[in-house]
Image (cartoon, rainbow, N blue to C red; front, side):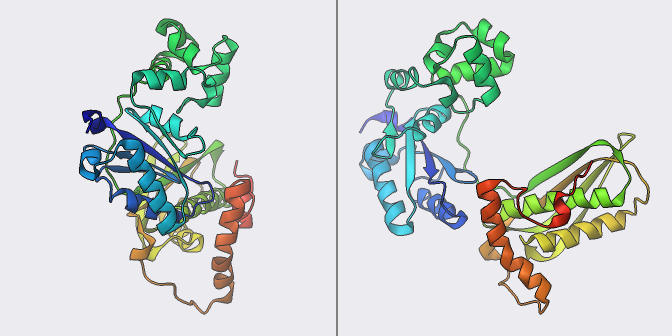
Length: 332
């Protein structure tokens, strides 16, 4: 068995219609093939297959095919897999796997032949504005970017970004794969375009943030145990306060109640506020939380029953389309 398998990286993409539970099952299945799995929410993952080929007595492409079959047969999740020696190249390959759903690039020559003719916008990690700048200078393919002098690319895109993207176009990406669980905290912020002291505007901005965070952690099939509010004032000073939720939850209504209690406890009165940062912390898999309980509050039960519908609408059409009316009042 070839020793080049010691450096094989898989970039696994789930279909866009995969649920959060399906993604988590794919991560669990990857753990049967290698202990080095890095989740990339919402629907992707990286895996370092160090020595897995020798363990399973299978070449990288055949082993990936085995994984795809198991993911589809056991969990009903279709995946596309890019296989290469670096993160960026594997991620670019997984977006162009062909009819087999797997693209293996076993060496520098294969990487060069694959990347060179692709449009520069297909390079993993490049932004639309960066791609447009390169195209304006006549660099329309990844091969053209790879061949261009580094000094020129750095002038077009800036030093660090230029060097990073040119390296990735040449199949170079030093980032290591880090085994970890799904993220244990996540944040969202709102910066006002002027200093405000109107409590209605502040609460509207906070409701927008907590709606975004609730949808995000529900999409990851997680629940939060704590919530932190950090506030920056007009003079540049900041203050923050953390409160545990009465019980772990991902429901927007539960997060909102706790967040507004934190806000009320701060007693800002007419303080001028410049920026709000909300962090949901101590995230855990939803299965570790308490079961769903009936609250005997018809209004609350109606809101909870609507959450999955609103999440699907916002995922498909944009997160501000549906949600609590107060969340979408202009907070500026």
